[in-house]
Image 1 (cartoon, rainbow, N blue to C red):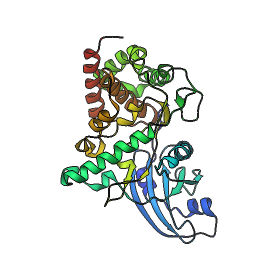
Image 2 (cartoon, rainbow, N blue to C red):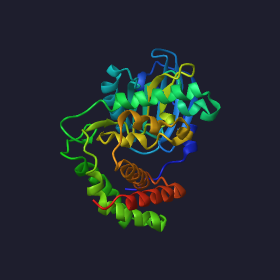
Image 3 (cartoon, rainbow, N blue to C red):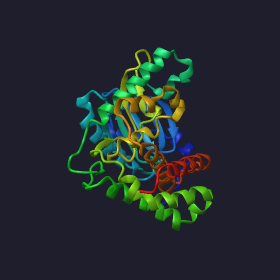
Length: 324
């Protein structure tokens, strides 16, 4: 279950010539290639091309199989959100890893704008600018979460489950089994493992507190994945879906505080527009812990200080809410 990444430096140095020709044909040339960034899941390059579409983005994935899954998520999200005014990049091709390419590559449309993270320190922006960014993100979340699947909860293109607990509870149980059986989990802080055990035991009652409809969830609405016009702060693109599903929209609030996003007060503004119930803080920290432990189990991503801090917040939330 645990997958170890290849060397990031290998991905960063990757020559995309073979990848781009596989996507667009042997007659096309790359006239410029610029790395846009690197993260836990891969390296992203912008390329300028000798023929249409003229520009593209290639994301070379670290983990096997993730390229095809991301492409599927992008296509589904694009179909639902483009009519609602939210731009999601078109996928041109998925190029499997080969001797010429160290990882699966998703070749997609180049969208204008900069990420909210690239705007820099939010405290250096004017109050009006921060307010405009906040409004843009809240409007995105409202558009995203207005999409529903009456058939039931579940993976983006998978079978429908009758209850949220039946679906998400299976995800929790799979990660919990890993924590109890895999040697890699022995290195986790004892508090993290203790809180995970308690939360897994109480998962059915916690998940039952969400009674909303099956809602479209992107899965990684973070400042780095939201493109805006740097002059108007209007949204120009939504990128990098992860573990997208039909479920509790609270999952899309977990990463909003990344990259100093807390200075925009996204969480407070979204809650003011949508309302929240008494168990919302408990579900928030429950999801936070299990999503990050899922990354640990599936990809080997480890953030000991954050795991401990999130586990302590979940423990406090469990104490504040009687067992259900």
